[in-house]
Image (tube, each protein chain N blue to C red):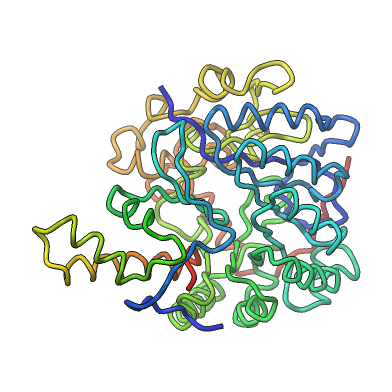
Length: 95
Length: 358
């Protein structure tokens, strides 16, 4: 097995053992992974909600760039890729 | 008001085919007759979800010693709980794993006592255990469930850490937990035989650090240096009554699996109280919650909300008072007991006292 590298053309999905859902008790989004629990910040939640198994990373960046016009697309793109790579390294996302 | 708990460790039974001399179960093991029934567990899991618990870890003993485990997993799933099986892999195989997966199980953590089969079986106190575990790992793989290999390490197997990492990959694990024995209950009784030497530990840590670099994104390695060799204590359970609760086989609710070793605390049972009452309002869960209970040097320490005073059980077991600073902290007035234990770790190891029902 090799490390999965997130690229602009990558189409990502959550790994089968990962649960990304809204927790009604805490009123916040959570990622549940084997023996770990993550509470993504607002920015990360927005990105993760765009992961649908069909939209590419580039497509996700386009959506965010269209919404946050004050930030350069490259800067948004770098943040998005870094965040997704980190989750891929943790085994949460696959291509 | 405390935050709701995140995770629940369900010790569904103390029965286990293994006799590991570092077992985290208490010295007084619970017999099958005292265990919660299927219905009691189902009700408890529902209460846990309503309280805010997100993850449930089915553990033991060997949780697969309970024949109703699949229905307990199903109950957890019905309530939206993320379920994890912590097993020795010595009872059952693909057929049971398939049932568990169908019931909604998300992950399996399989323990090994060593990579070397003979040493594995000697430490586990069960011949043929290593072979069963290896077959079990293949069965986990066959069902498609993600696998974490848990290698329990100590003085008598730590030198094989490089092979352990290779083995975890060969077994198809995505995660490897290298768990240093923690010195409570059976492990405390066997400490002189288990605590690694400084040289061993430094070498192991070097190998793990290197492997983490080369295996980034391939194998996640969880590794924590044993607290005896630390300067500051571990943030035990992330603080008493802050994140976790533990259910014993007979339904006692504890802030951690070792808490029953503390005298003078009446740990409430889920048979008599609701989980919410126990979590928020019981004397047991409020006793060491937060920082108000702390004495010096914790009380004025700028890390008091980082490590929460360390471990209450360790303070009691090594310093005789659960309200003192964890003696592994170099600032603790009782730290000398740790220094003595570390000196003993340089001597010839003693034989094991194996876990047994009294």
